Length: 51
Image (cartoon, rainbow, N blue to C red):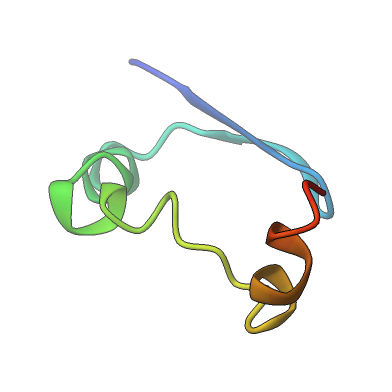
């Protein structure tokens, strides 16, 4: 069985071995969200400063 390792800066590392969850996480519907920034307007304020 294939495992999926997820590394998160806040919650740590997760090992997922449920095939249905791996299929869901790898689906195009969820993969399109991986580059979404959830910091809100803060990123717009600081992005012009060159971080």
